[in-house]
Image 1 (cartoon, rainbow, N blue to C red):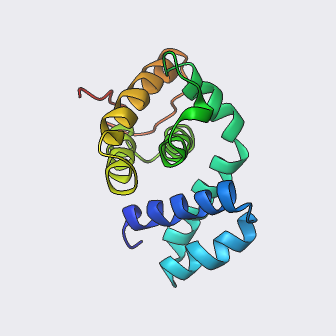
Image 2: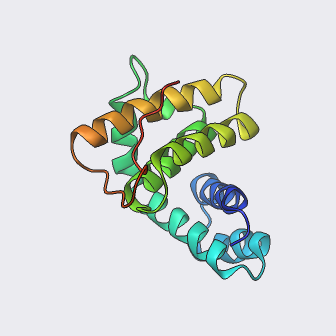
Length: 153
């Protein structure tokens, strides 16, 4: 596997193309994910799963986000911030081998790179609150030592 950050970026671009461009997941997998990640089958599988699960559970993830943004609505969030949050929630819930801290740090880095100056802090705060809720509800199923850690930021 190349670099998971590159795979996450490809997945984010693909999710954006589905959300705003109304492109199919098949098309964005071919034209964005596979084009970006070339012959790296592990990275392609990772990015494709991230894309498909994020798109499939967008409504559920938006409900989760809505519960943690005070006096705000999901539809009013910066689009890229909302997509990064959805993608991170997907990773928290569906990628057992990735530590929660890594997921949150990667989401922060994506927000800093692709969104506004304040997005990194915003994404960190929302994901930290969501993670605490998911842990309390026993919905995080990470396997291995050190895979669940609540951010201290």
